[in-house]
Amino acid sequence: MEICKTRTEQFLEIGLDLEEWQRLYYKNQQDYIRKRLIAIKYLYTGYSRLQVCQFIDCSYNTLASWIDKFIEGGLERLVEPIKHKNAPQHLSQENKQELRKIILEQSPKEHGIDRNFWTGEIIAQIIQHKWNISLKDSRIYEILKELKVTYQKAHRDYANANKAEQGEFVGAKKKIESLRPGGRVFFFDEFAVYDRPSLFYGWAAVNSRPQVLSDERRKRNKLNGFLSVDAVSGEEYFILSERSKTEDVVSYLALLCDDMAQEGCDKITIILDRNPTHKDKMRCQLKQLFENLGLTDRIEVEFIHTPAYSPDFNLAEYLIHQFRLKILHHLPADTTIDDIQMHIETYFANHQLQTPEQIKNTINHICKLGRQS
Image 1: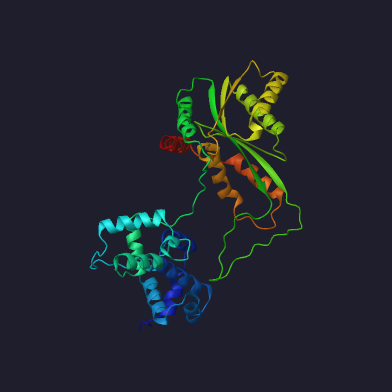
Image 2: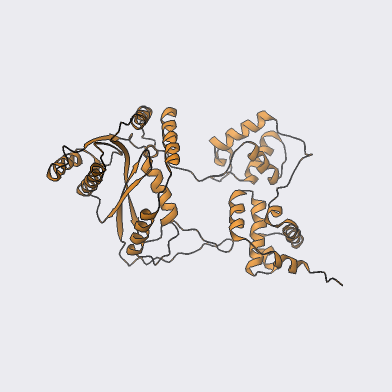
């Protein structure tokens, strides 16, 4: 006689794939779906059903229904959204477009609600007040999906940027496309790394904050990175330095040019921002160093500056951001600057951040920004 397993036994037999859980949590932004995912994770962590109900404020029966969904079809079944196939479309297309404009261009405070960002509940209030239509949060998120609106991390927009300069910078792409044999184009930028936690996310109980220990009495150690990226191949030329003065930039660029000359390159174009260490003083010192090293007759250097206040127009910025995500974020609090240096140098010795195709796509994106200016 076959023994029927209890719901708990069936639940524990399935197991929880944490990578898949994380992927689905990021993919599904609806609060009610994320509640289900959090509940299942808490149960696998060892909390009782009653504790989970208290943590996420749901009824025991609701939690039981989520467990049943998980047993039936795993995480994919659990994240299936509530469907309203037979529900009448109360909001007209005109209403929806007006709602989209409100969400993207206004804040709840402009509508008398003391909050800085939109939630499903607040949007439902606006719809109720403006069009006298009552909708559930689940329906609100369906409408947002229809309108192709998602909640995202914002990026800084430099108000001082010169739109005309940005538009003219598109011409830099012609430099890349018209390269003659022996010519190379590089994007150059600098960055700093520290041995203290900068960006750190961690799992924690609801309504609490994970803590990252930081010894504030310890000296804050710093290294400066110099990175040049070939605008065609994506090849990277990278070093770390204790300082980032004009003299250090000059030394790095001279090493880069010497390497290029040895590879048979006779002209190099370097695209860089308008940092004070990249101006006339740097050019004068580089010219003198070229004479000392015998590089003057071996290689020609041209500098092109990106538009002011326009970091998005520097290819190297994209790779530095990518590099920070891969290596620097979420480092343990006791990581030393020597550990970081070894980790960074090992990574660059064995990896290239972007393929030539990805480099081409990123440059096309930069040029698109220029045309929009």
